[in-house]
Length: 431
Ligand code: BGC
Image 1 (cartoon, rainbow, N blue to C red):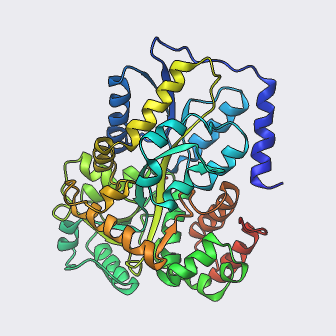
Image 2 (image 1 turned 120 degrees about the horizontal axis):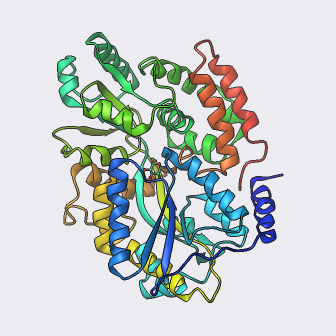
């Protein structure tokens, strides 16, 4: 059974259970399920909460801890099965289409807002299509994250005798050796499947380029998935794993980021939500830390669009529907787009803002990100992140995660065998 029908079967059980209505206050309330729980992430989501509350609605916080969101997605599915989905939930990429096909997302709620606010004019087709189901908006996109970043503590680099950020894998290994020799953790990392695969997809991008990345991790082309270049990517992944701290199992990404911020480690491979931790620690981009594309990926941009999907509510819950609409309107407004992304480490989704980032007061990392996003859109360098739910169904993603994490935790694992295993992650590529 494919992932869509599996989800649809599970969801259809929901009809056996009564819908439990959320208690609405006079103007209406909205419950939001999300996984923004680190210090920096919370600061960002609090901006949305404050604005929705200022508009007179009640915000019910449905935060579910766990970076990358797999725990939040499990909670969301069980709530849907119990007939009690929230009003709004953080859902991304092709998963939005799967939820759309269950009939649980609303294709009506956002119609008027999208029209009045000209969403079709504000968003690039790539972004708009991600959040539409059969032509209707079912989610509001809030920001764009770039995944293929390397975060560097320059003070640690200096102490280890490294004078520049690495631009090739060889330079990366040389920097890693120096950091280790000077007693630092070379590469801060948390041993969780989504973090392992964040590193893996960077390496695939570096070794195979954006075209190879697309063939392997987006098109799921069987030959490319199990071919010699993929085996090479696993060989490099093994080397990179050697620069990570051996006690990394289960560590959250923000704890790994804190090791770099606090000067225990030199580097971290992580999407730019990592910047939210630097910002929360009052550190300045370009001075206290450096953001550079992961070596060998400067002509590519793996994107990850955070979006908030809107669930169908009974027509008599007018106040709660108004709260969903208010949240969506706020989320694409200029003020929110700016303050949220500054706190979150991301860039806005609005093309007018992406084209004018210096005027908007964004830092050097965000300006570079917007510039590369626009440039890479034209060259094919812009690719959806597999590790962050943008490229495949969650079922295929889960199978890839297993291969990658098993490989990284087995020092005797064979790169050629690992790439052969990838072949079995996806017998029928998603179209
Ligand atoms: C989400 C980010 C979040 C990160 C860590 C990513 O998948 O897109 O918004 O900050 O996970 O939890």
